[in-house]
Length: 60
Image 1 (cartoon, helix red, strand yellow):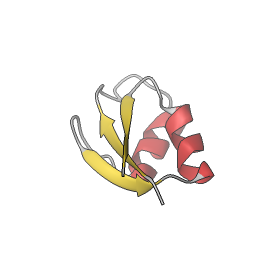
Image 2 (tube, rainbow, N blue to C red; image 1 turned 60 degrees about the vertical axis):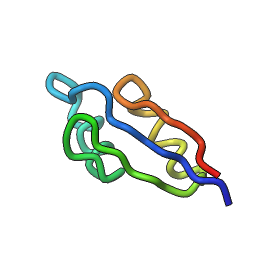
Image 3 (tube, rainbow, N blue to C red; image 1 turned 90 degrees about the horizontal axis):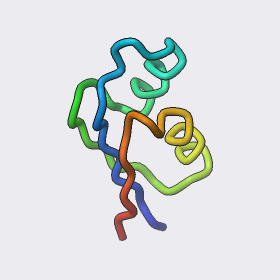
Image 4 (cartoon, one colour; image 1 turned 180 degrees about the horizontal axis):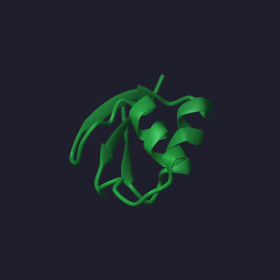
């Protein structure tokens, strides 16, 4: 199965609490943190919520 490389590119300071919680549940704690997750609808939805704070690359 394909995987997603998710990188936090912007700070969550000043963002909504929901966005902060989503970043935390993705495993992103600070700027430039990188996590690799499976390409599943649950993670795609979470990334869509914070799409202005992260960048996503597909990893094979």
